[in-house]
Length: 348
Image (cartoon, helix red, strand yellow):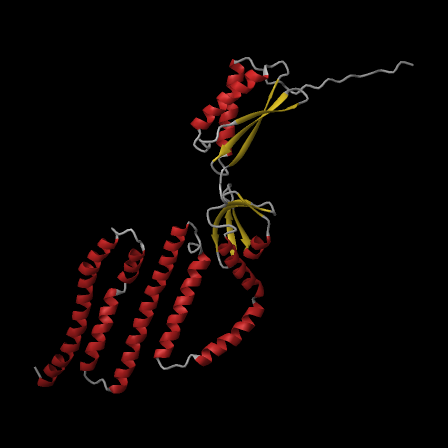
């Protein structure tokens, strides 16, 4: 074999071996050291360390590769100082980009952890996740440009002037965006809440994006409402504070009925329903009240407490079934509507 070829092989084998060794070392570090440390952090009470280790896991081999490439670059043949400078800038740029992506995941993960600890769902919405990522990645890109020797001052100035023009052209979009931030920060509604708007729309809040709030009706129809309208609307939030609410069921008995006996039987049936139905609030006994003298019956009202909106349907269904059967066995009449008409004929 020609001696020149052997020299080339020897010259290239050192940097290639260094790079390959860095990749293997990174894989070993990820497979054994990082994996063992991650197992230890899973046993701690603080979940923030789990977020950090999960975020950097996919970047470990890349970081070792970049470090080994930087070390090997000085021994790569035919690379003069100019090319070494370019390669160094590329390595730094890729490293900053990788760190930025890892920090972005850490930031979003820690926000989610903080929100969960505070009992809110702010960062879980699309608007907060995207906003956090955009801010972190933008800072990373500016650092990359600065490391490449590109002055970011004119860029920031141009972005300021351009931002003013864009804000005028997209005022409705920006109005929805800031309205979405206001909704989330004020906790007027949050994902999972069942709400009713003054427009009549009702549904569960699925998500709050940068432009719309998405409601899912109980009929599985999706309603998309602009954030600005949600912010200005009168909203009834069934899950704000105590999500339980009153359920009212009307009952009518004949005028010949013993009302004390009727109330006693109704309370017994209501207690059975509360014990049997999951959606009924167990620590809130039903209340039975005589309400009015109706056209053909004495009207009573029975008040239950449901755990949340939507639980009223099985409660009402079960109560009507049981009260009808119990009244029948107790000979308590549920009268039909009766109307007496008196017709007078004028005799000439």
